[in-house]
Structures are given as structure tokens and as C-alpha cells.
Amino acid sequence: MSALPRILLITDSSRGIGAETAIRAAERGYWIALNYSSDDDGARKTEETIRESGGKVAAVPADIADPRAVTRLFATGMSRSLLKL
Image 1 (cartoon, rainbow, N blue to C red):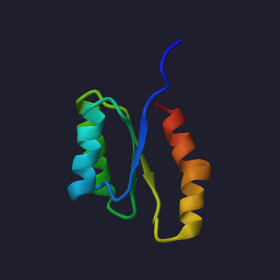
Image 2: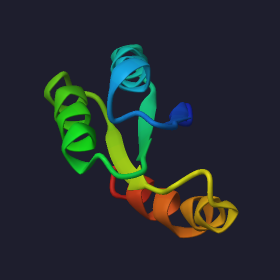
Image 3: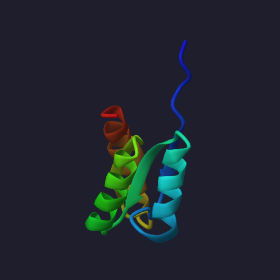
């Protein structure tokens, strides 16, 4: 029986500390749910960096300041994105 993947949701991960945390966690074998609000280009760049190094990543946009967006993030967006990995 294989172990379940370790999945890490990192908010505001399209740039700065969030992006660096996502990249380093992916290097350590975590599957990354890359959350961002509006920086599509930054999220895409971080996602590409993780994939190029062999990591598993799914970008999941949501404004975590909005409680309804957080509910949607967990109810649909994140699960659908991670199922593709």
C-alpha cells in the first residue's frame, strides 16, 4: 500500500515568500495547491518552476478575504485541480 501524498495549500503563493515556500515544499515532495488572488502571471511562473523541477502543483485562484471564495476553494476548485495531478 502506497502512502498518501502530502498536500500543502499555500496562500498568496504567486510571489515573494509564498512562492518561495511553495517551491521549497515541492522540492521536499509535497504536492502544492498554489493559491493566489489576482497575479495570474506570478502564479503561472511559480507553477512552471515547480513543474520543471518535477513537482506536483495545481494553481487554485481565490480571494481568501472573501469567506464564500474560501468555501468554493475547498468545495470545488482545490479538489478538482488536485485530482488532475
